[in-house]
Length: 326
Image (cartoon, rainbow, N blue to C red; front, top):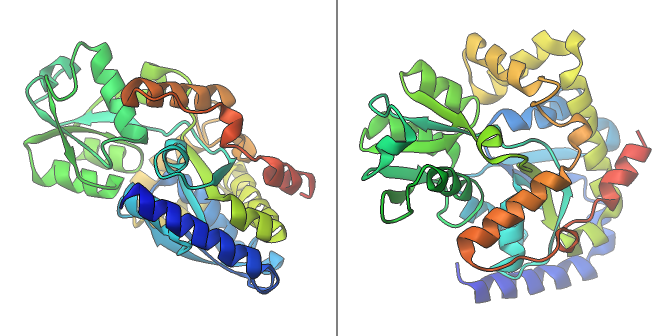
C-alpha cells in the first residue's frame, strides 16, 4: 500500500468519525486485530469472564496475517483497535503519515532468536536466510541489530525473507530448512524448541529494555469515542489482573489451551512466562518509556531517519482515566 493511499484513507476516516460521533457512541461492538500469541491473555479473560459485557461491549477479534494488513485495516477503519509491536504504530505515523496514538503498554515482546537445529551460534547464520514479518518494522529491527552485534551485516552476510506473522514464521521454519532463523515469542518459540530448534537468545537480554505489544488507535477515533475506549481499557486491565492472580492460574492456562489451541504442557509453560513478575506481562499494561526510547533508537538506526519524540505518538490519558475508574 502506498503512502498516498494511507494518507487519503486516514483523512476519510477522520471525517467519518468526526461526523458520526453520536452514532458511534451508541455502538458497543468493537472490531480489533491482534497477533496470535501469549500477549492476548487479557483479551481472552475480558471476554470469558464478562469484563467487556458488563461494560456493554463486545469484540470481534481478528488475527493478523501480517503487520502490513494490520496497519492497513486500522487506517481504513476496518478495525478500531490493534494490539501490536509498538513500532508498527510509529511506522504508521512516520511512513504512512496516519495520525495514530499509542494508548498502553503490555510486554517486552517476549522474543527469542530461534534457529534451525544445525545452527550452533549466531555466527553460523552467515550466508544463510532469516525470516521476518515485514522487513522494515518492529521485530525485524530486533533481529538485524542482534546479528549486527555479532558481526553480521544485513543483505551482505545474510538474506532476509518476508513471511508474515509469527505463526507463519514458525510454519516456515518447520517446512523449509533453508530458512534458518527468526524472532519468535511464546507459544511459538516453545513449540519450535519442542520440534528440535534452538533458542539463540532473548531479545530483551540482548538489546536491553524494549516496549513490545501496545494498543494503537486512530487519534480521530479516540476523540470521537472516549467513553468506549476507556471502558475497553478497563475491561482489558481487569482481564489482565484476573489472569495474573495466582488463584486463577489453572483457569488462565485453560484460556491459553482454548484460545491458542495449545497442548496443556505448552499452555502451562506459556502462562509461567506471562505471569513472571519481572519479565512477564506488564502490571496493568503499563507503558515502558525506557523501552520505547530503545524502539525509537532502533528505528532511527535501521531506517536512517530520526523519528519524533516519544510524546508525539503517545496519549496515555485514556489509560489513566481507565485506571482511575477501576
